[in-house]
Image 1 (spheres, rainbow, N blue to C red):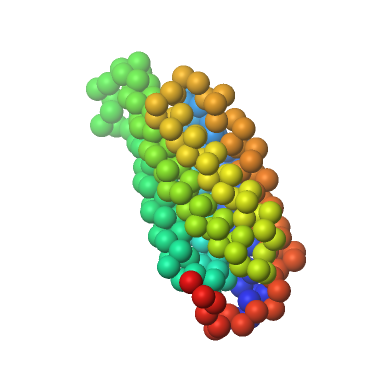
Image 2: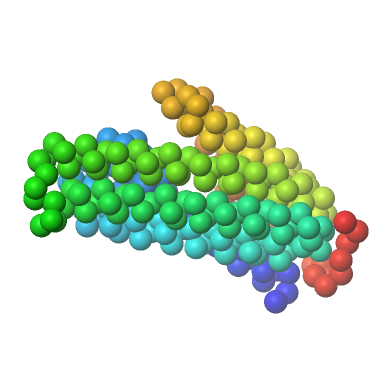
Length: 229
Protein backbone atom coordinates (compact mmCIF):
# COMPACT_ATOMS: atom_id res chain seq x y z
CA UNK A 1 0.00 0.00 0.00
CA UNK A 2 1.06 3.57 -0.60
CA UNK A 3 2.28 5.47 2.49
CA UNK A 4 -0.70 7.84 2.28
CA UNK A 5 -3.11 4.89 2.35
CA UNK A 6 -1.32 3.32 5.31
CA UNK A 7 -1.33 6.69 7.10
CA UNK A 8 -5.07 7.16 6.66
CA UNK A 9 -5.82 3.59 7.74
CA UNK A 10 -3.61 4.07 10.79
CA UNK A 11 -5.35 7.32 11.67
CA UNK A 12 -8.74 5.66 11.30
CA UNK A 13 -7.73 2.76 13.55
CA UNK A 14 -6.25 5.14 16.13
CA UNK A 15 -9.36 7.32 16.15
CA UNK A 16 -11.57 4.21 16.37
CA UNK A 17 -9.54 3.12 19.40
CA UNK A 18 -10.05 6.48 21.12
CA UNK A 19 -13.78 6.58 20.36
CA UNK A 20 -14.33 2.94 21.42
CA UNK A 21 -12.46 3.57 24.67
CA UNK A 22 -14.63 6.60 25.41
CA UNK A 23 -17.78 4.66 24.55
CA UNK A 24 -16.81 1.75 26.82
CA UNK A 25 -16.34 4.27 29.62
CA UNK A 26 -19.69 5.94 28.96
CA UNK A 27 -21.66 2.68 28.70
CA UNK A 28 -20.02 0.64 31.46
CA UNK A 29 -17.44 2.86 33.20
CA UNK A 30 -14.72 0.57 31.85
CA UNK A 31 -11.35 2.28 31.81
CA UNK A 32 -11.41 5.40 33.94
CA UNK A 33 -14.44 4.53 36.11
CA UNK A 34 -14.05 3.94 39.84
CA UNK A 35 -14.84 0.62 41.52
CA UNK A 36 -18.20 1.90 42.78
CA UNK A 37 -19.21 3.10 39.32
CA UNK A 38 -18.23 -0.20 37.70
CA UNK A 39 -20.10 -2.22 40.34
CA UNK A 40 -23.20 -0.05 39.95
CA UNK A 41 -23.06 -0.46 36.17
CA UNK A 42 -22.90 -4.25 36.54
CA UNK A 43 -25.71 -4.36 39.10
CA UNK A 44 -28.15 -1.97 37.40
CA UNK A 45 -27.71 -2.88 33.74
CA UNK A 46 -25.66 -6.04 33.13
CA UNK A 47 -26.57 -6.13 29.42
CA UNK A 48 -25.13 -2.66 28.86
CA UNK A 49 -22.07 -3.69 30.81
CA UNK A 50 -21.60 -6.72 28.57
CA UNK A 51 -21.83 -4.40 25.56
CA UNK A 52 -19.22 -2.13 27.13
CA UNK A 53 -16.92 -5.14 27.57
CA UNK A 54 -17.26 -6.02 23.89
CA UNK A 55 -16.48 -2.43 22.92
CA UNK A 56 -13.47 -2.36 25.24
CA UNK A 57 -12.06 -5.53 23.67
CA UNK A 58 -12.63 -4.09 20.20
CA UNK A 59 -10.77 -0.94 21.23
CA UNK A 60 -7.75 -3.12 22.03
CA UNK A 61 -7.87 -4.59 18.52
CA UNK A 62 -8.05 -1.09 17.02
CA UNK A 63 -5.08 0.05 19.13
CA UNK A 64 -2.93 -2.88 18.03
CA UNK A 65 -3.89 -2.24 14.39
CA UNK A 66 -2.90 1.43 14.80
CA UNK A 67 0.45 0.38 16.26
CA UNK A 68 1.01 -1.91 13.28
CA UNK A 69 0.29 0.97 10.89
CA UNK A 70 2.71 3.25 12.73
CA UNK A 71 5.31 0.49 12.57
CA UNK A 72 4.91 0.25 8.79
CA UNK A 73 5.18 4.03 8.40
CA UNK A 74 8.12 4.58 10.75
CA UNK A 75 10.16 1.44 10.10
CA UNK A 76 12.20 3.20 7.37
CA UNK A 77 13.31 5.79 9.95
CA UNK A 78 14.69 3.20 12.39
CA UNK A 79 13.51 -0.38 12.14
CA UNK A 80 14.79 -1.34 15.59
CA UNK A 81 12.95 1.41 17.47
CA UNK A 82 9.85 0.80 15.36
CA UNK A 83 9.88 -2.87 16.36
CA UNK A 84 10.42 -1.86 20.00
CA UNK A 85 7.32 0.36 20.17
CA UNK A 86 5.25 -2.28 18.38
CA UNK A 87 6.27 -4.94 20.93
CA UNK A 88 5.63 -2.61 23.88
CA UNK A 89 2.18 -1.79 22.52
CA UNK A 90 1.39 -5.49 21.95
CA UNK A 91 2.36 -6.40 25.52
CA UNK A 92 0.25 -3.52 26.86
CA UNK A 93 -2.74 -4.60 24.79
CA UNK A 94 -2.36 -8.17 26.05
CA UNK A 95 -2.28 -7.04 29.68
CA UNK A 96 -5.23 -4.73 29.15
CA UNK A 97 -7.31 -7.54 27.63
CA UNK A 98 -6.34 -9.89 30.48
CA UNK A 99 -7.19 -7.20 33.03
CA UNK A 100 -10.86 -7.30 31.95
CA UNK A 101 -11.27 -11.01 32.75
CA UNK A 102 -11.95 -10.21 36.46
CA UNK A 103 -14.80 -7.98 35.25
CA UNK A 104 -16.40 -11.05 33.71
CA UNK A 105 -16.02 -12.73 37.11
CA UNK A 106 -17.66 -9.75 38.82
CA UNK A 107 -20.49 -9.86 36.29
CA UNK A 108 -21.14 -13.54 36.96
CA UNK A 109 -21.10 -12.93 40.71
CA UNK A 110 -23.67 -10.17 40.38
CA UNK A 111 -25.82 -12.43 38.20
CA UNK A 112 -26.01 -14.86 41.13
CA UNK A 113 -25.70 -18.05 39.09
CA UNK A 114 -27.06 -21.26 40.57
CA UNK A 115 -23.79 -22.52 42.00
CA UNK A 116 -23.39 -19.20 43.84
CA UNK A 117 -26.65 -19.47 45.78
CA UNK A 118 -24.76 -20.72 48.84
CA UNK A 119 -23.20 -17.29 49.25
CA UNK A 120 -25.00 -14.33 50.78
CA UNK A 121 -25.63 -11.15 48.83
CA UNK A 122 -23.03 -9.35 50.95
CA UNK A 123 -20.42 -12.02 50.23
CA UNK A 124 -21.10 -11.89 46.50
CA UNK A 125 -20.86 -8.10 46.48
CA UNK A 126 -17.56 -8.21 48.41
CA UNK A 127 -16.21 -10.78 45.98
CA UNK A 128 -17.34 -8.67 43.01
CA UNK A 129 -15.57 -5.62 44.44
CA UNK A 130 -12.40 -7.68 44.86
CA UNK A 131 -12.59 -8.70 41.20
CA UNK A 132 -13.08 -5.07 40.17
CA UNK A 133 -10.09 -4.00 42.29
CA UNK A 134 -7.94 -6.66 40.63
CA UNK A 135 -9.07 -5.32 37.25
CA UNK A 136 -8.20 -1.73 38.22
CA UNK A 137 -4.70 -2.75 39.34
CA UNK A 138 -4.06 -4.83 36.20
CA UNK A 139 -5.39 -2.01 33.99
CA UNK A 140 -2.95 0.38 35.68
CA UNK A 141 -0.13 -2.12 35.11
CA UNK A 142 -0.79 -2.02 31.36
CA UNK A 143 -0.05 1.72 31.47
CA UNK A 144 3.64 0.96 32.06
CA UNK A 145 3.83 -0.42 28.52
CA UNK A 146 1.43 2.15 27.06
CA UNK A 147 3.67 4.84 28.54
CA UNK A 148 7.01 3.43 27.42
CA UNK A 149 5.84 2.76 23.84
CA UNK A 150 5.31 6.49 23.43
CA UNK A 151 9.03 7.29 23.87
CA UNK A 152 10.34 5.46 20.78
CA UNK A 153 7.16 6.41 18.91
CA UNK A 154 7.55 10.09 19.73
CA UNK A 155 11.23 10.03 18.83
CA UNK A 156 10.56 8.44 15.44
CA UNK A 157 7.71 10.86 14.71
CA UNK A 158 10.09 13.72 15.54
CA UNK A 159 12.86 12.34 13.33
CA UNK A 160 10.65 11.13 10.48
CA UNK A 161 10.62 14.30 8.41
CA UNK A 162 7.12 13.52 7.14
CA UNK A 163 5.21 14.04 10.40
CA UNK A 164 5.15 17.27 12.45
CA UNK A 165 7.93 17.50 15.02
CA UNK A 166 5.55 18.98 17.60
CA UNK A 167 3.54 15.75 17.58
CA UNK A 168 6.69 13.83 18.45
CA UNK A 169 7.39 16.14 21.38
CA UNK A 170 3.82 15.91 22.69
CA UNK A 171 3.89 12.10 22.43
CA UNK A 172 7.04 11.95 24.55
CA UNK A 173 5.46 14.28 27.13
CA UNK A 174 2.40 12.02 27.03
CA UNK A 175 4.67 9.06 27.77
CA UNK A 176 5.95 10.81 30.90
CA UNK A 177 2.37 11.50 31.97
CA UNK A 178 1.27 7.88 31.50
CA UNK A 179 4.25 6.63 33.54
CA UNK A 180 3.21 9.06 36.31
CA UNK A 181 -0.31 7.60 36.11
CA UNK A 182 1.11 4.08 36.43
CA UNK A 183 3.19 5.03 39.48
CA UNK A 184 0.33 6.95 41.10
CA UNK A 185 -2.13 4.08 40.64
CA UNK A 186 0.18 1.53 42.22
CA UNK A 187 2.01 3.63 44.84
CA UNK A 188 -0.49 6.39 45.72
CA UNK A 189 -3.95 5.04 44.82
CA UNK A 190 -5.67 7.48 47.19
CA UNK A 191 -4.39 10.50 45.23
CA UNK A 192 -5.81 10.14 41.70
CA UNK A 193 -5.60 13.91 41.12
CA UNK A 194 -1.87 13.49 40.51
CA UNK A 195 -2.68 11.84 37.18
CA UNK A 196 -5.34 14.24 35.94
CA UNK A 197 -2.96 16.48 33.89
CA UNK A 198 -1.65 13.41 32.04
CA UNK A 199 -5.14 12.59 30.77
CA UNK A 200 -5.45 15.98 29.06
CA UNK A 201 -1.98 15.71 27.52
CA UNK A 202 -2.73 12.16 26.34
CA UNK A 203 -5.96 13.20 24.67
CA UNK A 204 -4.25 16.05 22.81
CA UNK A 205 -1.25 13.93 21.75
CA UNK A 206 -3.00 10.79 20.59
CA UNK A 207 -6.08 12.38 19.06
CA UNK A 208 -3.80 14.90 17.38
CA UNK A 209 -1.70 12.13 15.83
CA UNK A 210 -4.80 10.20 14.75
CA UNK A 211 -6.40 13.21 13.09
CA UNK A 212 -3.19 14.26 11.37
CA UNK A 213 -2.73 10.79 9.88
CA UNK A 214 -6.37 10.52 8.88
CA UNK A 215 -6.76 13.99 7.36
CA UNK A 216 -3.31 15.15 6.35
CA UNK A 217 -1.75 11.69 5.77
CA UNK A 218 2.00 11.97 5.20
CA UNK A 219 4.28 13.33 2.54
CA UNK A 220 4.85 10.91 -0.30
CA UNK A 221 7.95 8.94 0.68
CA UNK A 222 9.56 5.78 -0.63
CA UNK A 223 8.52 3.24 1.99
CA UNK A 224 11.15 0.81 0.71
CA UNK A 225 14.05 3.22 1.17
CA UNK A 226 15.68 2.68 4.54
CA UNK A 227 16.90 5.87 6.12
CA UNK A 228 20.02 5.76 8.31
CA UNK A 229 19.45 4.20 11.77
